[in-house]
Length: 183
Image 1 (cartoon, rainbow, N blue to C red):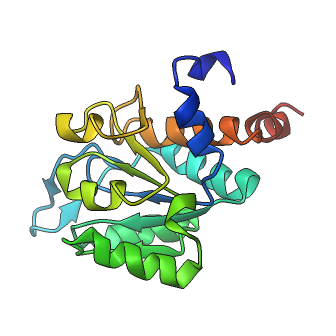
Image 2 (cartoon, helix red, strand yellow):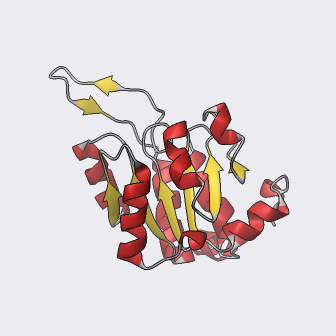
């Protein structure tokens, strides 16, 4: 495994090798978790371009399906998911187990081949069911205690990209992906 991930446990690497579907929370994971409102009360979210490109690389070079499960409802999440090619989006879901069960049914991928990146206790019901678990560096203490991998990056600031790179590296696809940019 690349020096960049030398502190990752062998168990985390082995679990990351099995991921065929990566699921992301939004607020605090793909965004910084701040709640911003426009002048008419509309929610505004800030996404990170590095995170987005990491998700695209995960799909393109790893052949890994991606999904979003989030408790909040926002049209901007649908827009971002469309931009990134994320086909499975579940919003306004307070019991994430329900969306997770629907996702498994839609994709036919077993829970053991799924990964989840979360940040708060609302993510625990899914985190306890998937094969590979991760939390952002600024996530809740009780979540960080129960995951396979904790990113160095904060939510909305490169954490998702780091995780995508970790999975691609574990699966042996990262160098191939990088080579395309160096040619």
